[in-house]
Image (cartoon, rainbow, N blue to C red; front, side, top):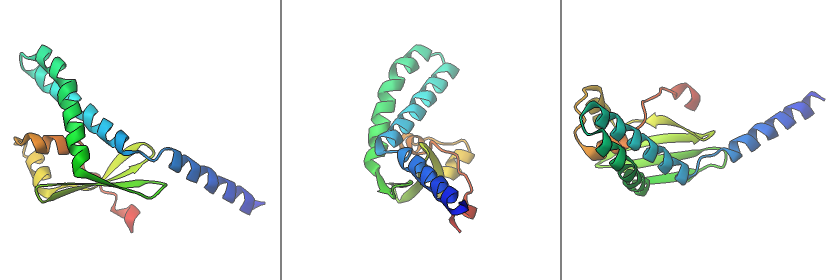
Length: 139
């Protein structure tokens, strides 16, 4: 009886993971939302709030397409690994349960982010996740 319950639970969890495995469209949508929010936040700090609200969706759509074209998705049915390469740097993300978790952050871009000197607009598009240490999961 215990084996049947465990099997049913495993099947249910597997079905949930398969159903919520994020697609490339979900990834691009995440990038788009992040860029729109950043443009709006930065425009609110300056006097160009209306311009930021107008340009945010356009810039977000362009950034989503750009980052999407730089990204390769490896689909493992229960989850996906997204690898975005740009100027010799690599960002790796785990896509699971319609969420994205950073596995590897580009060192140059993370150092720029930490120093608050992020000037390269392409790097801003790529840096939409804070690094999370999940090495214990991968062992």
